Length: 347
Image (cartoon, rainbow, N blue to C red; front, top):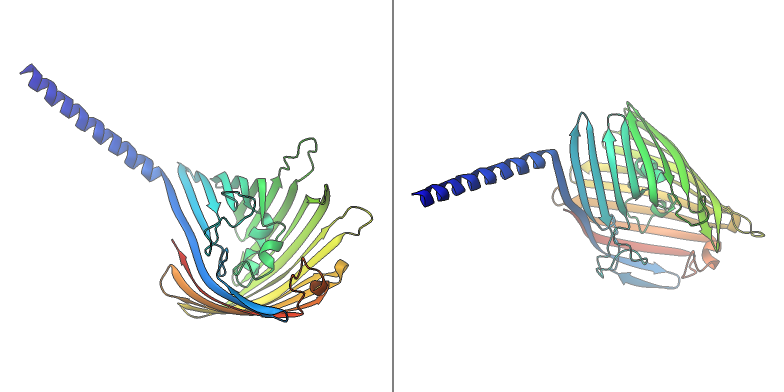
């Protein structure tokens, strides 16, 4: 009898414990979440220029960059939460990481706190220049391996970055400070910047300034970056354009290098599942007497909420040092025509 009572008591205790754990798990689930997400882009790109032609499928993403994300968020109440994001990039054609340095989470790895007053993030993340100019590119930094803007936004990513941004009505402001981590030189490898956008109705405008020290050869040199843009929306039509200029000092007696980008374009949502786009981009290096002009036409069709087909064609002309400099133009071609077609899916 006592043995039966003991077994019954053990079972009741076990059930109560299990129910308690379930309740705690449900409570924790309601307050926090971890999400697994990403993007896979597979396409074929054909390129033809004065030096020959080739086709390739090996890409880090044509329409958008391939990525794998781990996102977490915990609700602290009162409009406060903590969050993190780990993001890696990969090559669809080969399965390799999309960088040669072997960084696993090379795209983003940060943790932060969000409050009614703003958001503070710490770690490797997109630069403030990227955040501000995102709305001012006709393709929102789409076609990242084709268009010149994404790699030109002052490095795209900063490591050891402390970034704050807040939304106050139509005004969004941000500031960042990236630590250099260079032993013996507190200033080397650092970056700091400010930026703001103002969006009301169909009109959106913004600007940013970033100063950093970058490694040029064997020494760190100052680099100044300024950019701005505007966006206009009229129903299903969206116009966007802007300017960015960057000046990097070089060791004496070499003069500093200045790079300028101008661009503009339009997208048209013909239907809920079809978007057409056109953009024109100019990259000018006045200190090296080089210029590149790129025109791009794009069409994207949604097969579902997560999957789309895309087709784009771009034509580029090269001038001055953009023809003679192997780093800028390995084929030394004066012009180039390319066509890309592929499928992009989110998960």
